[in-house]
Image 1 (cartoon, one colour):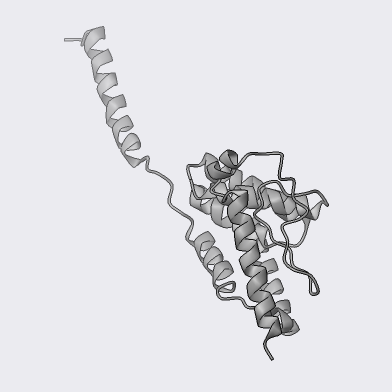
Image 2 (cartoon, rainbow, N blue to C red):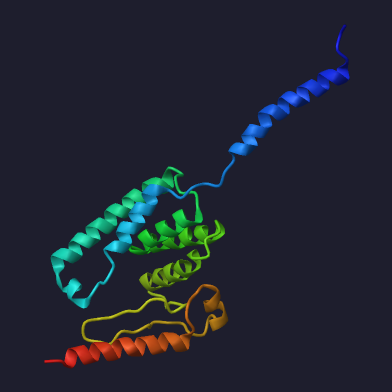
Length: 201
């Protein structure tokens, strides 16, 4: 007895579902890249408890900059290979390039931070603001969020050049950036502490 067209269609549908269900079950959220996490951890570790004395040691600073450059090479390789998948991957990569040395490094850092936010990382918002500020500074334009402090040897720390009028504090808050009044208070405290330390015999 020949099977009817209806029973053939039903059998084919059952076979298709049998293959489709395991495929759907295998779809999982991407995992954070372990290599990127390790690179980020190393980037942050070297910056724990940095003091003004650290920057007086030319050999140590040179070593840190060389390690930063190596981490950027590693991170770029992961990016080019499509190995960065999650918001945390992109946020970590943004920090690595934020510690770069050229405007292009900071512009890439900003793009990575925006990708982090797009991938669902709320923590990526602050680094998105900071990377844009640093890019603007490095291209001789004023920062707009107030995340970057500059310090020269013979002058107090400053947020300038800083376009304070372009965006309101309400937008800073969206990016996790303190309002201007808090920024100014922090800056005053930093400069007061530096002055007190310099006046000690």
